[in-house]
Length: 253
Image 1 (cartoon, rainbow, N blue to C red):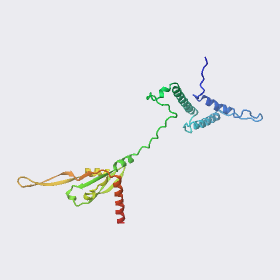
Image 2: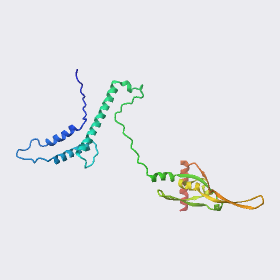
Image 3: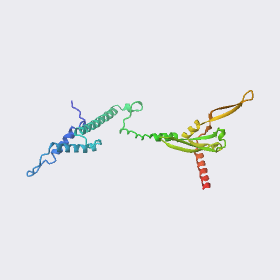
Image 4: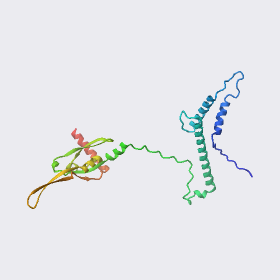
């Protein structure tokens, strides 16, 4: 009975690698000149040369390491790299041999069996996480299209007001908000200003007469604005609005 041999041999450790490095150090000058005497190298120089060669090999293998890494630590990383490549190669060989011996496992009749991959899939690149300011800016500065009516009778002749929103992250956001007819076709307001409009109240003073004809004055808090949220503009409407604004700007100039 003959024993089968594996034609592809994968290194499972770095012992041969380290032996080759030492043998290269010993065989650099196999036939020295008899008349030339070479001073023997001390142990520190041998270790330094050994470490330098291992660093070159680790760089070629794609292993990351610091400049002050020790000899034993670098050996361990190279061994781990070699062991991982050996296991990966063995797993691929086993998968390929199973596919060759049992072709029905990868046929359309067995949908649960995974198809052998020619190369390992590459992991998708992770996007850079957004900062707190970017997240708040996207949320608070999103435009809301509104029709705005001022319900405060004291401001019935007021065409509009300036509103300011401020916090530690976004800073100050200031915008003029018109009222009434100027917003009949919708007016775009940042979401942070929209929240201010929605929460704004005024002191509503009312008078009434009782059964005896006496006048009573009543006061209470009431919402200052009636806000109607309109749908977003279509691309055609946005193009038409941009043309109108450009024409109005040209007339003003």
